[in-house]
Image (tube, rainbow, N blue to C red; front, side, top):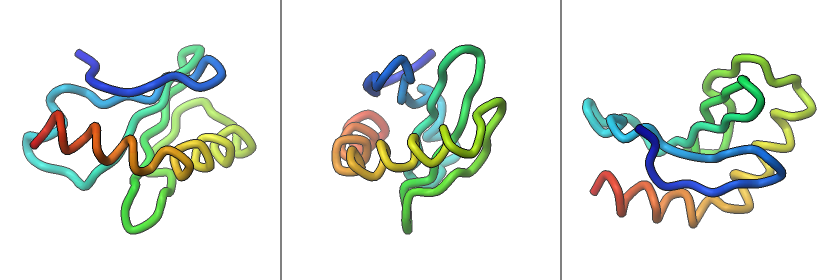
Length: 81
């Protein structure tokens, strides 16, 4: 099950609903066209894992996550407590 999130140019930024058990640092998943990445938000936005995205796309996704850092973090804490 997916929780929270937003869309950007066909990319879906979201959380898995079971991510708080055990707790992990704040992060967001991004999916599009069968590809998926996990981005850590702290201490800075960076790629944790990627399956299928090229380096250029990952740079763009990191930029989008940086621009939406506050929204992502607020949504994360609102969902996971």
